[in-house]
Structures are given as structure tokens and as C-alpha cells.
Image 1 (cartoon, protein in one colour):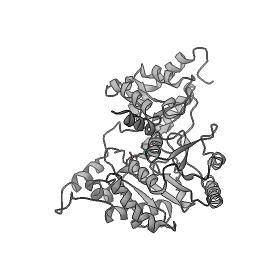
Image 2 (cartoon, protein in one colour):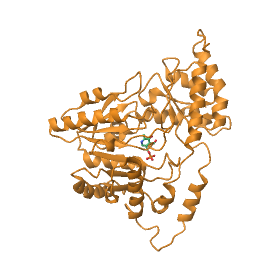
Image 3 (tube, rainbow, N blue to C red):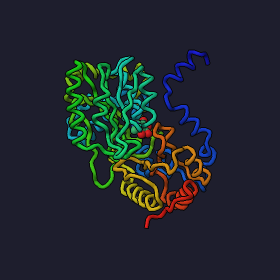
Image 4 (cartoon, rainbow, N blue to C red):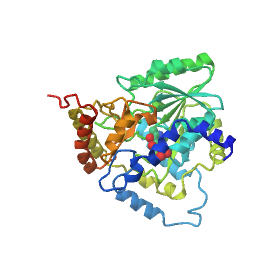
Amino acid sequence: MTRQQRHHTAQIAGPLPHLFRFLNESAWARRRGAREAMDFMLGSPQEMPLPELTAALKYWGDPLTKDWFGYKWSESGSREVSARSLRERTGVPFAPEDIAMTNGAFGALGVALRLIAAPGDEVIMSIPAWPFYEPLLRDAGVVPVKVPVRSDTLELDVAGIAAAVTPHTRAIILNTPNTPTGRIYSRKTLRTLANVIEEQSRCNDRRIYFISDEVYARITFDGVRAMSPAEVYDHTLVVYSWSKQLLMPGQRIGYLALHPRMPERDELRDALLMTQIAGGFIFPNALMQHALADLDPLTIDIEHLQRKRDRMVGALREIGYDVQTPEGAFYLLPRSPIPDDMAFADLLAARDVFVLPGELFEYPGYFRLSLTASDDMIERSLPHFEAVLRQARPDEALIAD
Ligand SMILES: Cc1ncc(COP(=O)(O)O)c(C=O)c1O
């Protein structure tokens, strides 16, 4: 690799090299497949796929026409399924022709950034955040501007975001339900943000967009609905993927949707197709598009996920951990009992319990647990969480009276 190539890679990678070094070299890499492993590391499936998902893929894998597996871009059938699904979820009249089918949310985010932002533009994001936003932004030549969430509640810091806007700001990435905080942003929060950003767009004479990453929109607890920012702000580009709803991130399909009340949407629509082609043919494969109408109504068992959340949150609190209750998505974000979350994760890993230390996603002092772990893993892990807390803080009485 030349020095120039190395420089380019380092520029776009952001915090990722540390994360990948950890994933490739830590005890998890060696032990994750072991029967004893209690794997809370990533939002990956730890149980067999939904049988209906397998059946749909088998059915639609059988070709009905000569060009069944021919080139596919945003096909009319999958656009219609996506637009209908998004309309039903948000009440916003999204049109099929404003949906660009992509290979998951990764593809949709990359396309959205290239569509609306120019090199040197700034895009604001809240931290802690999904660690792949930064490389996607940097690859598009965009400057990430990071605004921490409010540390007491893990809520979006609207005043902080407003203060971070400059004449170079092009977009704000919003992710609700949020990874990794589990927060669902309220109507009031989103409306306040929308009003402030509308005003700042006017003052700077420069449109600021919302890029709304809604991959967890259908993974919410206690019957709460995750409102889309598109419901309160017309200049929103919605990103969706079926990876989470179906827990099948290796079978990739998602979309980018342009808001129907965005006045510039005709122009953006044309540019969108070219951006997808020039970006490396960022479309889902044929099989996923054929199967989409059957896949969209399916979902993993959210009630089961909620029972796992309740069991984990309740037990961890009883043991003495400081952890908030997530309203949606897959994760718990407990505070590390010692400041060094990497060292704490090592203590757990020595017992085959694998968690993601906050240091690796720019949130030191915390660690992340994925609720995709099985019931069996959860039950077996609890005595270890207790033992490791005693080990880390030997002087403290742990069980609350
Ligand atoms: C917040 C968030 N956005 C986007 C993605 C990417 O989704 P996909 O793998 O479907 O492209 C993920 C996956 O982990 C995510 O957690």
C-alpha cells in the first residue's frame, strides 16, 4: 500500500480501526463460537432465522421469467411495498417514485450524503452513535460535527445541536429509536429541533436536511410508537433497512426515501439514480426485491425481546449496575462500574461473557450489551455480572436492601 493510500484509509476510518482490532484480536474472536460463550457483543442473530423468512427466500428464488436474476435497480414492486409501509408507519404520503431501493441502510446513508452534501460540508450527529456514521461521512468528504447527548437522560441535546450549526452545516443525522442509547425521541423534542433548524436554514440561506436513520423504527417496547422526524420536517430523507426487523443483516435490502413535500424532490430524484450507479451499483439484489412483499409484514418476536430487556435490566439493577431502560432497538448501555470500560470488558471476557466497551464507540465509562443474546446466555451470564462487579469494586456492598 502506498503512503497516499494509507493516508486516505486513515482519513476515512475514524474510530473504526480500534473497533476492528478489538473484534479481530480480543478473546471474543477466539471464543465467540464456543458453546459456553455468552455473546452480547453485536446485534447479530444468536438464534435460527424466522422460518417464514427462509420460506419466502426459497419461494422467490425459483425464477418465473428469463430476466428474474437480470440487472435490478429500484424495481416498481419493491418501491410500492416500501412506500406503502412507510406511509402506514408515519402517515406521511410518501410516493413510490421517491423511494430509492438500496443494499440496506449502509447504502442508503452513503447515497444520501453524496446526494445532498459537497466535500467540506458539515453534518451534525449525536454521540454516542453507531460507529459507522463517521467513516460514511468522511468517505463523502463531509466533516462530522459531534454533539454529545444529555448525560443524565441520554436525550437528544437540541440546544447543543442548534449551537453547533454553522454556515457550512448541510444535515443532521437523527437515529430514533437510537443505537446505542435505546431512546425514542418525543414529538416535542423533534418538533422543537425542526423549528430551530427551519429558522437556521432561513438565517443562513442554506437548507439543512434531516437524514433520519429509522432502522429500528419497528423495534419498540411497551407499545410506544417511534415517530419519524419526517412527520415534523419536510426536508427529511428517510433511511430504512429490513436487517433489524428480520434480524438478517447478511440478506441486504433497504431504501432511501425523499419527503413528498420537499420542493426540490424532482431534481433530487434524477440525481439519486446516478448517485447509486456511480457509487458502485448500490441496489439490493434481485431475490430480495422479488421477496419484499412477503418479507415486509414479518418481524422478529418483539415481545420476546422486551422480556429479555426486562429480565436483563431488572437483574443488572438488582446486582448494582446503573442502567437505563431502553425504549427501543436492541441494546442496553450500562455504566461501567470502574472508569476503564476496556478493563471491565476484559474481566467479563475472562468468564466468556462478551460485551462491547464504550471506549470503542466514543463513549468511555459505559459498555453495550445486545439483547439478541439468547435467554440461555442471559441466565448463565447473570452470576458472572455479579461476580465481576464484586471483583471490580471489592469494597462496596452490592445488593440493595
Ligand atoms: C443505527 C444503524 N444504522 C444503520 C445500520 C446499518 O444497517 P444495514 O446493515 O441494514 O445496512 C445499523 C446496523 O447496525 C445501525 O445500527
